[in-house]
Image: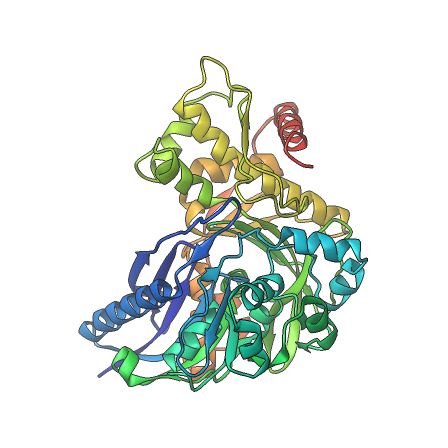
Length: 493
């Protein structure tokens, strides 16, 4: 008898993956492909949309073949994606007008600064929950429409479509039948009003984005269309969509106000569930939609770090001082201290709570005795210090974490997890399935397909594999944080 599973398409910043989950939400098959990062100018980051599409189709077909051999049939697809990354394409041909402009890209920093000088920050923040920063999709859309010849006229004539990566993939999977997104991805564009849960005319006017390019916004668990058999070899409904950090929030079972998670992928993102209340931060954190079910939004307060796992990728591919990410644990463990070496990985500016698009990376405290081990350790420590800054900002906003659920590829490193627990001075919980982002997308799709139960049932089924308790001396901890604060002060502004 054929068994049922759900496939999550996890389209991330550095790779495309497909993971199949069985009826107990256990992963049973996986395929992954990295794709090219394009850096055409300082602070610019782009992806080839055709490469994103081809890698997504390849890994999905691979997993479909794997599950078929195991006697499974896919009941539905869930999609989770790198957020804010912006695509614009021709509605008639499906051809991209330009490469995808990635969330890390800072090319529109001057535009954002100009809008701040016009006094628009408060209005934008009250409507979207976001800040005026090139991180978000709005100024990226406008840049494409203004810089690609004829694009703005085509957009105003209804000939072009805009979307975050989920929308682009759904368009391609359904062969142009559906132009849709979900509320979490919409809430990251700076064009969506998180109070009315609709596209906002005032924001569209501020950012000069024509409404004709916008997708329809749906719940996270909804009918997003059917993947065409010509694409995947079978017709499969798409029943779940959430931006990667919101999908991880779901995957960690953070369904109650106050529950908090931190995901360590390319970047690091801390989200705390604020229930049906939009909390506006005094410390440059973001107010966002955590998930939307049955037409009702649940909100979150979020801190965003641009560079987390990406700093390890840089150690491997950029300066080539490691061969594999897993090598970093042993190198860090070989040292008794950081020897006063600090790295601020502001490769594309700094995110929360600083929001400085002009900051650039630096390493401080180098001596003649500094070597590979010290640089690797400083890179790993930087992720923990940045997380500390986020939780400190949340505490100042009135939300204090007493423990933290962690996930993402980087949390497989035990040394990082222990150092993080020490610096935060709170216990960490690491789940048995680290890829909670894909798990969250699979759950959203499977819930609509009738494969999985209610959110409460799902949360009750989750188990923690490892706990990390703080054990660092308070004096040592404070000395390390003093060094970090000095390093940050030298790159900000």
